[in-house]
Amino acid sequence: MRDQDKQRLTQAEWNFSQKKRAAPQTGLVYDTMFREGEWVAAGKPVVALLPPQNIKVRAFVPETRVGSIRYGGRVQVMVDGVPAPFVGKVSYISPRAEYTPPVIYSKESRNKLVFMIEAVFDPAVSANLHPGQPVDVEFESK
Image (cartoon, rainbow, N blue to C red; front, side, top):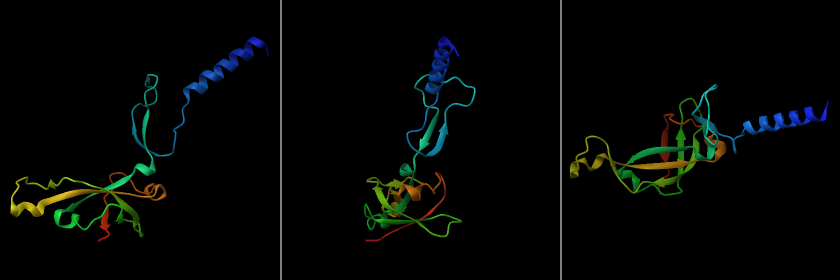
């Protein structure tokens, strides 16, 4: 092989290597922005990844129950078809109440107040949860 051919081959291999990218970490492909054959501008993401450590469960609890839930408290999440619960911890308790419809505030409608609670899990555990999946949640009481 001539010197000029070796240089062209080296250049072509380098160009090809610049077009391949690897994800910085493993994760679920949450969204695809481009399909095969579409033109992608430099620096644009092609997929959105959801790493296991970012998967969480959101639950809404009644106003009468939120006082007994503590940040860092234990959470058990049950999923249909899975015999053992997923165990995590409370990572967020909303400071704001939300209403379940109808949105009319009165002393009588106070029982319709709910608070959003978020629970996180060890990444090895959360990798087995699927975004949007219906779950049953049990919170540890104080």
